[in-house]
Amino acid sequence: MTLVRAKKHLGQHFLTDKNIAAKIVESLQHGKNYRQVLEVGPGMGILSDILLQKSEYEVFLIDIDTESYLYLQKKYPQLGSRLINADFLEMDFAAFFNGPIGIIGNFPYNISSQILFKVLDNRQQVIEVVGMFQKEVAERCTAKPGSKEYGILSVFLQAYYKVEYLFTVKAGVFNPPPKVLSAVIRLTRNGVSNLDCDEKLFWQVVKAGFNQRRKTLRNALSSLINKEKMTDEPLLDLRAERLSVDDFVKLTNKIIESR
Image 1 (spheres, rainbow, N blue to C red):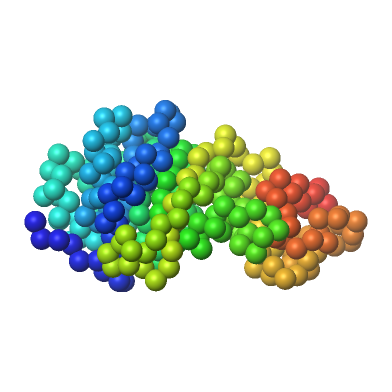
Image 2: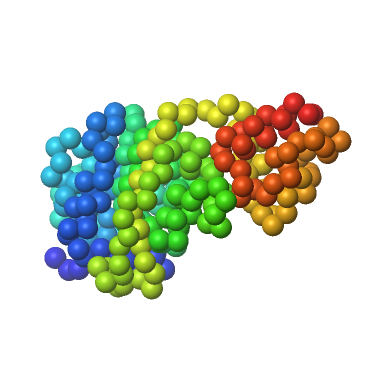
């Protein structure tokens, strides 16, 4: 079969090391109450080859690249409608999956954050994610309060998932090699179905706080808070990067109480 060309505009860097591919697949934790697994951006199928040997999974592949789709159609005729030529970011999970799922992939680096926000939007269904990201993005996802990498993505992901940095991957195992280091992380649902606060306001507070991260929250959140009623709130004297998920939940509740 003709090999698939990696396309720069799709952020494609095909993994070529089968040992690393096996390590990524084995990072999915079995027995997490899901059977269906979706691989995003399979390319030429280096992860898919291993996934499809696992009888415990019902594997789905989605790729926006028509060339990859046609290649995989010939390679895995048994998949039928479980091979999907579409944009993951536009995918309606309910149309394909009838319960909880796991997601895996060597994700395109140019849409890393969008992929993670898509996961968050479907967090009640996505139980686990194992994926390759640019190392810098992986560090942002796993960052703790007080570090310069800690930001909006760190808070939102850690509110609903246990986030683990698994291992670093060098550029030489990709074709073409990216100009950055890569890393594999795992997200596992942490049992929090809904936060103990107004979630819509929580998201607003986190975004507003980090959008002006050099300011204290008293200034960064000026449009959201009742300044007169919150003069003694100590959390407002800190910058957003100092607050844990629990702190943001507390602050959201205090803003509601003061209104």
